Length: 110
Image 1 (cartoon, helix red, strand yellow):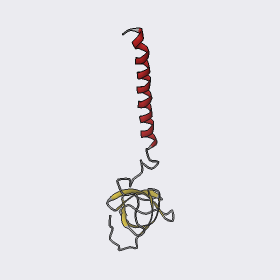
Image 2 (cartoon, one colour; image 1 turned 90 degrees about the vertical axis):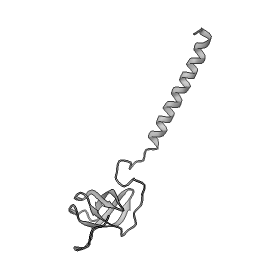
Image 3 (cartoon, rainbow, N blue to C red; image 1 turned 45 degrees about the vertical axis):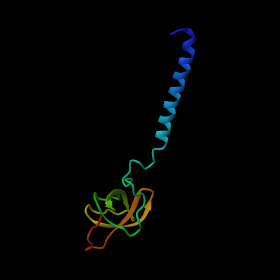
Image 4 (cartoon, one colour; image 1 turned 90 degrees about the horizontal axis):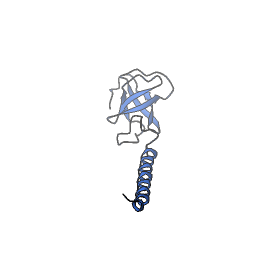
């Protein structure tokens, strides 16, 4: 490599590095704030009144299964809801569902 080729090669190398760094930053920037929470498997909203079942105890937070997906959830009034209990969605906060227990005798769905 001659001295006339070193400068253009260095410029190309710097440009490639800047492009790679830019692509990595965009990929990280696009990562959602709630990406590590449950419920992001394609469905982002759940209708109020939808029924499901607790996969873990909600004390007051845990995991529920609603619309065939697992979601991060919190009990509406902060109380503990046992694992395996039927629940109903009362609202949604981002990807976190706010639920309350179904009356006794309601079959679980989800």
